[in-house]
Length: 308
Image (cartoon, rainbow, N blue to C red; front, side):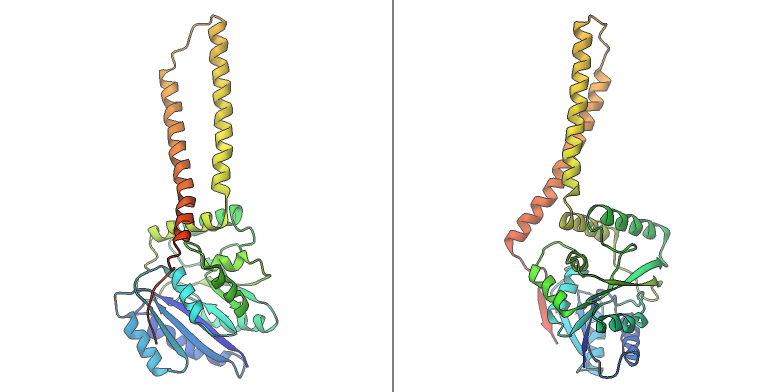
């Protein structure tokens, strides 16, 4: 007999909880006989009726549902960490609360885990999203694969099943400002991907804003790659070489008696370019230093208000 913990971060999902909970319960019949279920629902500081809807779900299924309410909005990836902490299953699943990821895929993922695969990912082959959202997502995944996590499956993932052992290893890291899902990839366990098409959101409005996407992009790069610092170093060498050749060019013309070419515009362009590069470099270094400071403070990734 195996127990599966289904971790669902919730943020302004009052319209999704009733249909999502119904689909989850209906999906239980597709698992092997003897499988037990635990639904760990984490309210990430929602200001609507999400918590009330979650309580209704628990009242109807008191033995299966565990509710975790955070004191405020700490972000979906920290909410996932909170769900991991309170999950007690032999394996765990992370799925969104809006049914964009099909629950019908879960029994297939579970079957792979029973066969000894400790990490099984739902791999998004396509998504019913606006063109700009697709472009941002594809660019994000390409850059992460190229510079940070080369073993990341193409298309990325948010829907994943993983063994209890991997959960404990991620929690033991206690990383700040990181991507908790990508930590599973960083562990470098062998994995299997199951392709699927991400569906259009049926109810409610997504709170996954551009600001949050940019923060995730920066966090993922800084947490898993030193490529930005390496780019700064290489660019510094290139600019230094250009400056040396330009200086030699000026000296040659000076001593050769050639007519000096007016260079005010050129010098100003070089000055502005180098200054901009320095500011960007300082900003990138500041991102790394800030995260080092934040980790040294040992503040928690989230604060739990109550557990039911």
